[in-house]
Image 1 (cartoon, helix red, strand yellow):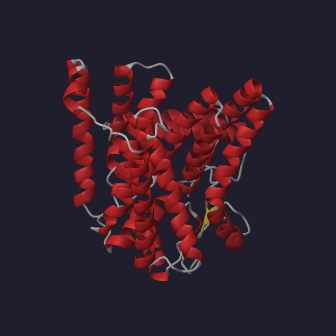
Image 2 (tube, rainbow, N blue to C red):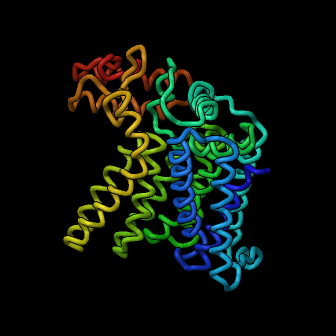
Image 3 (cartoon, helix red, strand yellow):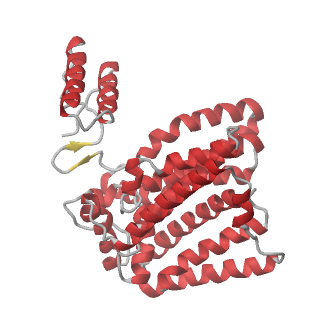
Amino acid sequence: MLALLPIVCFTLMWIAFQRARIAAGWRSAFLAAALVWGVLVTAITEGLSLFRLLGFWEVLAAWSALTVGAAFYLIRLGGHWPRFNLRAALAGLSRFEQALLVIMALVVVTVGLTAWIAAPNTWDSMTYHLSRVMHWVQNGSVADYPTHITRQLHQSPWAEFALLQFQTLSGTDQWANLVQWFSLLGSALGISLVAQQLGAQRRGQIVAALGVVIIPMGVVQGSSTQNDYVVTFWLVAFAYGLLQLKATGRWRAAVAVGAGLGLAILTKPTAYLFALPFMAWLGLALVRSRRAQGGLLVGLVVLTALVINLGHYARNSNLYGNPLGPGEELGGYKYANDRFSLGATASNVVRNLALHLGTPSAELNQAIETIIVQMHAAVGLDPSDPRTTWK
């Protein structure tokens, strides 16, 4: 079971961060270890790819060395191993809180079993998530290759970088779904920490975590090879680190925020949009409270994120002349609007909200659609305008 090596490496780092008190508590140590692990996945993939050495023995050697290094660091730390007394922890909870945790555990375990047993079978998995991984395995590199499905080349690749490690070490795709499942678990832990930072007590933190776990789309995606939960996890880690950075102003926290931001961007381009308001808020808060030092901290966040994405940016720039890629798929399927205006923005917002208002009732759905069409007609807009609509 050589595919367990990356997991063992992560676990050792998680324990080490707790013993070294690098993070405050086991949940924040989990996020810190995940960020380091994510950067290591990127470094291994990009580093070996430069020499077309993304093969079994090379990946095995890299993870073996990192695991031995983590174990040696843990031994050097000394002290007692962190202990978790489940009975004592549950004894301090109310019955309502215990019930919430049981529900959460049942969902997480069920999704995890599904992820392990069921073969990847979504459209995106077949057309580019797993397809690009098999090309990389075959080529020993993540360099661009001939394909008519161009999103295999220009879309952000971190989730598939992680899949590649397990695919290479195990020779099977059975581990592929677990990357999203791990992200489900990490997102729940991370959002509970964000809730704590915002003043929520224990029950509030549990409710916040439960809300993450039972989101219908999350339940479905948690056992797939999509990348939406992966980018969610990195954005949650980014948000938690951001709150820590604002409170402490530490350089280490800035690197952690940059790592979360960089890994989110390297996973899915939508991270740019979701992270932008947080970065704007962070920049204003740090510059206002810490002046020049605040500006340097923001610069370190951005620099860290850029370094993590350098390989992907370089490949896109070399092939398309743009680090962000071509902006469209073959056949004229564009990712951006052809028209930019307040009306176009309002139309997109309203139509996207309508997507989430679907019900089992055909009559109610038709009524919602009629209202949306009438709203557009009232201001002279076409609800199916090809300039603002994905074909």
